[in-house]
Image (cartoon, rainbow, N blue to C red; front, side, top):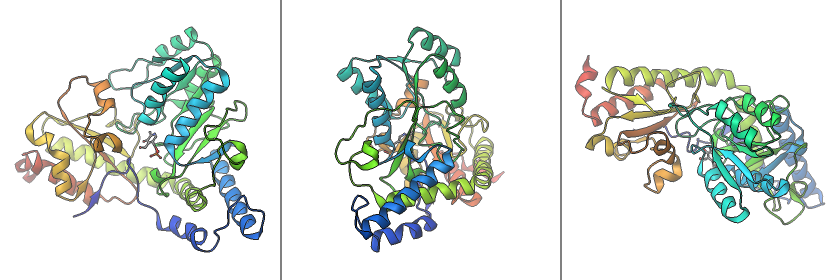
Length: 383
Ligand SMILES: Cc1ncc(COP(=O)(O)O)c(C=O)c1O
């Protein structure tokens, strides 16, 4: 059995994406900065990929800068905003990805900024009234709040936060890595100055992403070097990665409604089956609320027991890939900083299942069945 339910960590490459990348791996290998025919051919493809991404997000191609992925993009936006505008106050949340929290820790030490944590409600949603009061006290701050949480799936009202940030002259960064390709981002309508993406979260290749920087709130680059990316990110571009990413985003936008409906139905199926078959099952954050959580992520909370402590390991032995939190924290055998912030000291088991267009209802059924066996309640599955 091989069931992959860890799509928030990374997704399988779409074969259509691979086909789009292939010519740029084998035939068109020129450096896009070269002025000969090979270089020009590749440059044209690169710029066309940029146009595709910008067109889908309703911004200008000059506002899209390709990166090595989500982490680099988050680092670049946070450090860039602080250094360009001399920002002293950052408003963020303890539930952000480490690409943000660790960058903020570094900026605190290196640039003397203060980080103010916005209050959360009991489901882990941002308290917008508290955000507003922090913005009032700290004008010209940097706000960094993610659109969709990678562990519990909670969604941010990114439009409202953008409006609040604008009212108080704040620079608004949102880590959109988990939301990209699952929801539409209209960058003319959203009042956000910087967002980030990683292609491998939406069936594109690994090691490539992009940052959007609003032309109205330009920032200094993170990487200096050649004049690539209009001097905004030195280094030869990952050409076939970028071509693949643009194709993957195109497919994601083309099929978004269909996939949203289908993947939501898988998530709902799992919620209902878990409730029916696993006693005292709960859900972390607001992940069981289909209106206010990412439809690809479900974070299951199980009563404390020896079996539940070993659950991920045992699911793995059964051929089911899931996660306890973000990929990096599960690898480091550490608890999740997101769950610890929301449920301090809790010893309940946590399993994050994350779905994609390639999962099936049968996989959901088998996973719940295995989970019931592993948690010692399989007898109830017979009813
Ligand atoms: C919310 C979020 N931000 C940033 C990242 C980092 O992206 P990348 O793996 O492309 O560096 C991830 C990846 O897990 C993520 O889920």
